[in-house]
Length: 112
Length: 120
Image (cartoon, rainbow over all chains, first blue to last red; front, side, top):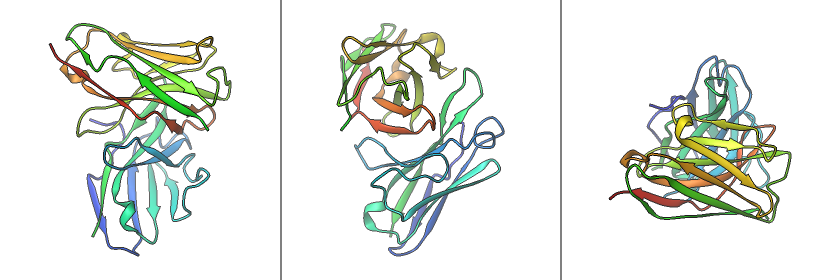
């Protein structure tokens, strides 16, 4: 069982906007602004898409945006494209235990 | 451009120790602005944080694995390593080495990953 909760799957049509949720608690998402999002295509290593809740690394499309409210973080993809079809994972720094990073279980995005 | 490459056996027997090394190219493990970490992904499943360390020796581990995990760094060889003791079939996974932003905890660079199977 993952520390952060993500829906198993979402789907959308090309051109639409879609939002993923990532729910944690008061020891991780709710406490820190160290939420990251990753995109993973099949048989590939994950790619950082968002860090510190809403910052994009160089080279990541501005169609990807992040936000947070309380214990829930969100990733929004606007103008959905076929190549966006992938698994998306959230992570957060956590004060639980020895203080480390926790991941969500991942959300499979299907572009219809 | 930073490149990370995992190396080590692709198969480990149950109860033995899994050992992997991550060679860093295009950067230095002595970079004080980042951490170096290990993340794994069982086949068909999600990502699991194993642990991370700073070249100074400061380490963080997943509490569920902490007693079995050793992460170390060799600045002379510019690489860092993972040892996981007493492995079982549940430790079968793709293991990724990674660079972690020291101030933001985002994993901003990943190795290609290496599949380690625990089997006799």
